[in-house]
Length: 89
View (cartoon, rainbow, N blue to C red):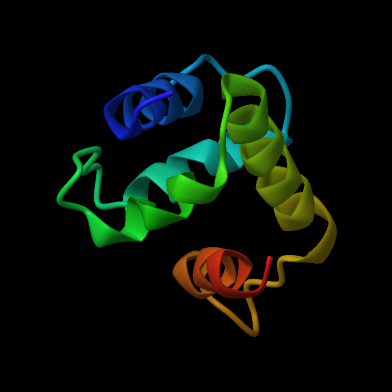
């Protein structure tokens, strides 16, 4: 997949209708990226490590699952939580 294809798929996947509680955090991820799904957004560089649509889905699924299990709004913001995931996996 090209970078443009990855970015387009990421945006499409994040904008799919919610099916469960974890999906509700996709809106926070979109806001983290400032709703800027372009090659110029340096926050999307992590896509270089992902090679397929399934890799992108797994990345988002893992992040939203972590939101459900570990996010504590009393001690961190959604953006800090996502940034930590980008930096540390």
